[in-house]
Length: 342
Image (tube, rainbow, N blue to C red; front, side):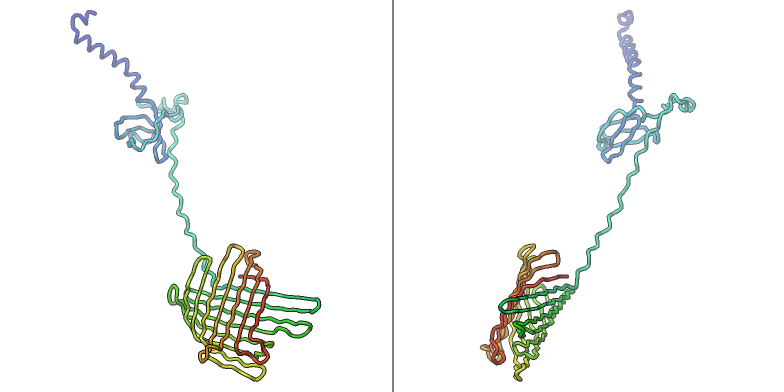
């Protein structure tokens, strides 16, 4: 009271000193208190804050006197657990620090960042160059007239880059009431070469034998030009035009050798995951006389039983305006078979 009345300025100075003395323990306790900083990259830092401002926080840890942490990298700040606080406070001697009463578990160092090794690139399987499709059929009828028909077909394709080679062999044999009703073999080979995305050139060669139609042997050969008119994921349509030379030698001692034009189209349609349709049509008008011609139509409907096994229904129609004597111009066959695809 005397200080206030006699010297007001001195009184105020003593009050500030006393307030500072009262706050010093609390400030010291706050400064010495350990904090746990969780960073955005997943790291955790434990220590006592030395200083901080709006841009960075300086913290003292057990392994470094000063660690500067940018404020924008701090995700969360909280009070550190007791067991993670430093065992030796500033100013303590080594003997006191080593006593069991004051010794505590040192803070765990941040776990090292493990960088995963880059995954090995997946190597795609090489394209399959060979494809094969085999069909076997059998018709057995025992009744007013006994009939046995056997037929088969093999189609092998080799495709690499722009080249495609197609090999096809088919045949049938049948008897009705013990009398021969079918005995034929057909085969051909066709080579394609793509000139671009749509246009390609081809050459086809074939040979056949048919005892019922009195064909002792027949062969053909001819080049041409093709166009991939449509090439979708489930539908393919090709058109071809070219020349064809055919020679046919018959069992009745007659023969026919002629030059033909060749017009053809081929369709492959995957209707759904079970059904698909393959169709091929070839027309051969004679160069000297368009009224004389041949055509061949083959359509196969497939039902996929398993991944590579199918049931097939095939319609084959062949027509010739000038067949051997006593032989009908049209030859229509309907077949059912089981197919295996590789």
